[in-house]
Image 1 (cartoon, one colour):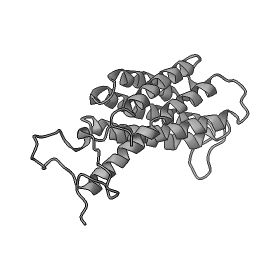
Image 2 (tube, helix red, strand yellow):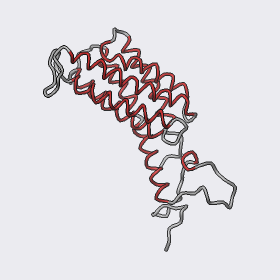
Image 3 (cartoon, rainbow, N blue to C red):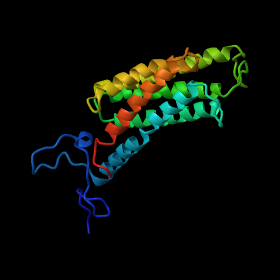
Image 4 (cartoon, rainbow, N blue to C red):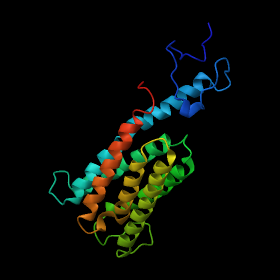
Length: 222
């Protein structure tokens, strides 16, 4: 018994978004159809992106919480590291969502640049003030400069992702504008003067909610 290209292995109808596999064509032409294994893989990537995009508003909430300077049980460092982790997940999800759009190249570039900035920034944020990491030529006073550089690179990555969202024609372009505005605050890191970090977190929250909501409605639920 063979499996049809219109069904999954369990026999359920296969639902694939035309935006991923090409536009619909007249009846009787099957040239736009993909093998089941490829269509299921595409479906899995989009489903991951839809779910993981909710890490963006969660990251914004954690960033806003840490920027307020309110005493918190886990400590500000734990909250900032959790915000960075959620932000990294959201960057990967957003790049996956835009992988089939016309702005996939700036989205991938934004992802790679943002990951480079996060790789520099997150380890340095866990160090006490004036302490340099072991095995590096950095002096104690250079850690602050390196952290600023890492935050600036991370902000540049978010700026490219915001531009990709704005030009993608796949989601609301207003979310891309909000993301680019929030990228300025992200690039300043925790060294910006209040209330700039809190406003940036609110902009990121608005963009994240819009992207997560719109991304979840791009294709039918699984």
